[in-house]
Amino acid sequence: MSTFHIPDETPTDFHSVAGRIGSPDVSPQDHTVINSVYRRITDLAASPKAVWWLIVIAMAEACVFPIPVDLMLIPMILTRQDRAWFLASVCTAASVVGGVIGWILGAFLMKHIGMPIAHFYHADGRILALEEMFRRYGVWIILGKGLTPLPYKFVTLAAGAAHYPLLPFIAASIVTRGARFFLEAALLKAFGEPVRDFIEKRLTVILLILLVVIIAGVALVELF
Image (cartoon, rainbow, N blue to C red; front, side, top):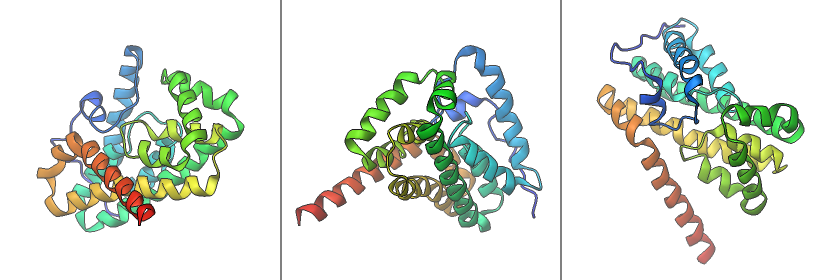
């Protein structure tokens, strides 16, 4: 397995990057710990076992981990653009598996594990609100929130807590996580390093536009 090299211009400040691509809320006392973890992730992305670490982090980010897996995926794709689709596929699959773990935590262990996770991110109220939204709107919450800066872990926990059916949850997660990671892969493969800053700053806008297109398409199908 090839070693991945992180370009010298990789940012070292967590908030400057994670804040652009959908980071969770963190308190000042958590900043040092999370920033340290972020630096460790950039080291792992350059290791010979980078793909395995990508799997672990993508799974963990979907249910408990504070740092977006994008921060590892982007430099890996930049270094090996010929493996862009493979890396996006691995990241999508691992993220969905992690999402299922999050769903299980929400469905069966919300009181003992799910809510402590929510409390760590100061998101107790946000997850409870999402849980209620799942009961009202179902799959549209996964499609909508999965393409926005709201951390995916909040969606997975809330879906489980609302006992939203697992198979539709998995299908919608594949669509939203795949859309995010394959769009990143496509842009990085086509344009390389010059598009990196655009992705980090504007990816959410692109995904929101994609969401509007999806909703419009569904509406047209139902209309005709």
